[in-house]
Image (cartoon, rainbow, N blue to C red; front, top):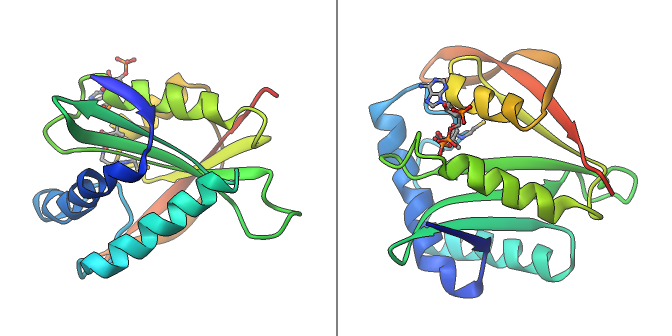
Length: 173
Ligand SMILES: CC(C)(COP(=O)(O)OP(=O)(O)OC[C@H]1O[C@@H](n2cnc3c(N)ncnc32)[C@H](O)[C@@H]1OP(=O)(O)O)[C@@H](O)C(=O)NCCC(=O)NCCS
């Protein structure tokens, strides 16, 4: 397994990872990624990927991918909190490993890689995780993320509400 910066040529693999999320949610209602009920179209995925690449080229975003046997099996990205120069020193983390590859150290390798890429770009990285996602919470605590609050009933899926645990890690310059 290799972890590296995302490349333009990763679109197909990343699109497959994004689409796999819908099966994962169908199998596990507590699957931790926030999603929409309907799948994105290929055009919407392409627009999203173009925005990601634009952010990377402008030095505003970072994104790492995990590759195994030539296939993308995970990705982790950090995006500025807002568009304003007054808020963009805070990054927001998103991380997802393909279902079937969980618990093999891929998330840990991705998080280490993307946090290293955050140095010099963000002062801190924030995230939100539901309490029903202990694997993710354990991963974040292992990397020094500290809980700073909770947002009650911030996330609902199928009528079931979940709190968000809010966590932050300072990034060394
Ligand atoms: C959360 C996620 C990114 C973690 O990636 P991963 O490759 O499964 O994580 P790792 O294998 O590196 O394991 C991370 C830690 O979780 C622990 N862990 C594994 N299974 C666990 C479980 N069922 N409960 C609690 N901790 C668990 C591991 O022991 C490891 O800690 P350790 O290194 O101290 O032993 C991945 O599971 C995933 O994509 N989940 C679905 C999407 C998601 O929830 N994203 C995060 C949204 S906030």
